[in-house]
Amino acid sequence: MKDGGSGGRGAGAGDLHRAGWLGLGLVLCLSACQGCNGGEAHGSGPSPADTTLARLLAEIQPVVERSSGIQAVRPLNVAPTDEARLREYIATQLETQLSRAEAAAITAVYARLGLVPDTLDLGALLAALLEEQVIGYYDPVSDTLFVHDRVPTAELEPVLAHELVHALQDHLVDLDSIGRALEGSNDAVTAWQAVVEGHATFAMMEWQFSAMMGGEADLTELDDLGDMLSGIDLTALGDFGSTAVLAAAPAVIREGLIFPYVGGLVFLQRAWKERPSRPLPFGADRPLSTEQVLHVDRWLARDEPTGIRFAEPPPAGWETMYEKDFGELETRIFLTEHLDDAERAETAAAGWDGDAYRLVRGSGGEVLVWVSVWDSENDVAEFMTAARDAYSARYPAAERIVSIVGTDVGGRTVVRIVDAASGTEVPEALRSVELLGG
Image (cartoon, rainbow, N blue to C red; front, side):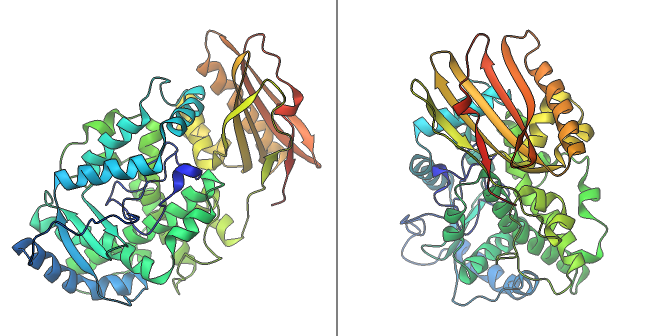
């Protein structure tokens, strides 16, 4: 679950290797260390670790440049980092990127969906996850790749390969600026993250295959990676230590953690199978939604989402706590959580064409208004049926009233879900929306 709002500052050129774009309303990229002196405190001269890392980077760089399709335009630095420096770095990034007020509002939204407990300390969980999972990152300020000193020597190269791609991406385009431009849409930011991380993971894997085969490898010649990875517990792959925090995290956080890597990897393999010239996924042709990442045919057809916005501000006595969009991915996650049927959830979410939500507060407490548009009337009916079943499971004791109705807006059926405490009168001004095309 990723958010592109003000918590998205720093959505830049790299990642914490394997544990990169951490979700639940936070677009956190430890590579975007604005003004951070991450490359300091390594002594006056190169250590043996520095020398080893520099040698390995020089060895893998030509292959990674070829697989990524990007050539370095300036020299790169590489250095080890340790637990204490990394913990301090993570704390600084969290403090900069996620205020307590925003964390509370984001938690309230996803708690209302039943995806996280309302007592969740989001900042503390993110810090614990990052400290557990981070093994490498790229800092564009110093143009340096950092690798955690707990990574075994034999496993350094894949970490370097992944972070090297982020450095090359940063040489090519201003990833931070692109991320900032997308901040208004949670779903668009998630799609962008999938491009950035999928590209790095693709090139890393292609380097690994090339090393094993002793020659050039082409991942597009393999069977579909989505089929190959289906059913595998991806939380257990590629770690160099405990995964206890990750395993205990709410499913939506785990999905938000993994999707940019795996979803982006699968997207890029499918996209480049269709376009063997391997166009880089960073220009105007990049995927604009998780729908396009999940369904390459819709990306190829440029099936862009329909924008939705609330037409009126909250009336007197009401305040907006948070508003954004969920996208197809998070719609699917919500349905899966409560239907306990991943296949049905995937099918019901697959007709998504755009959505928006607002969490508001008034004298009757919190109200979540979630509106969405769909590709066809059949998709509308399928989603409404699934959503009703999901909310029945969400509130088995009927402690809240959930209204799910279809209404005409500009000639299209908009599904409007209103989740409110029993007896709360929800003004029409809170529900009114307009479509922006798509």
